[in-house]
Image (cartoon, rainbow, N blue to C red; front, side, top):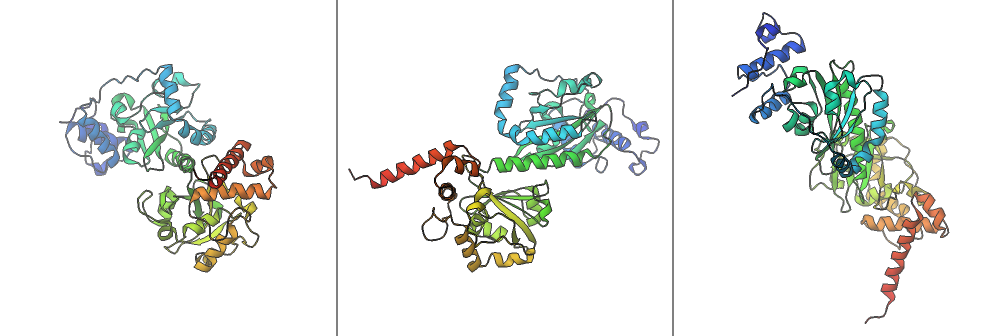
Length: 433
């Protein structure tokens, strides 16, 4: 049975009860609340389906819209535990959060980042907090914004739907939250789960800009960084129809596993390829039109590669491999053979890039001169990783410091590699027991 809300009648939306004559958004929301909470009628078309579904979930939890919410107390130990649990997320989001808050510094907005459970892990400090009595209590690190606690909000809906949304005024389930307006967007991890939600909230007024677009752009940037950070020992392929979009939130990303499977796609890649972002059993050849060895060869090239996707779209791309100890294999072109030129033709030339003969030539050209025996590159990414270290050391004449600077890692990484190789060599030459 629906709960009656206070003070909302047909007079609130004007003398014409017919929804066709309800003009403003506030009037539509007021009529929607009346239909839903008083009459038990689904207010289809007056508010979004996501808001209706959220109201239904809250209603099934026997929450009363007139309840006075109490935001949970956050102890110092709980706050530190929350931050420690989300170090990877915060590292991926740090740069975007700084840029975003600088961009919004002239506005009375709160930027909030919640983890997968809806707990705030980052919140903007607002010196005008006295004018925001609700947000000053609700936006502390450690406060839980989950729908089960705060009812219908943008972060709560986004967590359930995996979609960006905006919730304004009386769309909030609880009466005490109707002074807020919020816009949120999801951040996914490599498993396809919502790892975090980015939110912008204002109190006592409405947004005077397209908050959904802004929060969506920054959430995409954070998601891209998180996907790459979680793709250890995976090749990350970046591609787009326009090379100018690479390195922006509009770049397409694909994570390729050691056995040649596409483990994940970001949202842009999903739309370019016309397939879901996360699914099992998709090999790189059928989805992207490239064999794994050709993708590995791309990690050894300095420039962009023209690629023709199986759906016919021509794109420009580059591949990187970030190994467990921090080596980013985008440095590898320094050691690629000079006979492997960067493709400078139009994307139409991509069709030739996946021909077997040329593909084998790419693989051969990308193989380090002194690090690999005769034959094609092995398909295991761990072998590819060791080969790059060996080729770097060879190119630097065995100079550990020079090779470490070139690869952008510490000397300890190279020393550990040499110790491992030495131990393996000793084991292979040791006489049998």
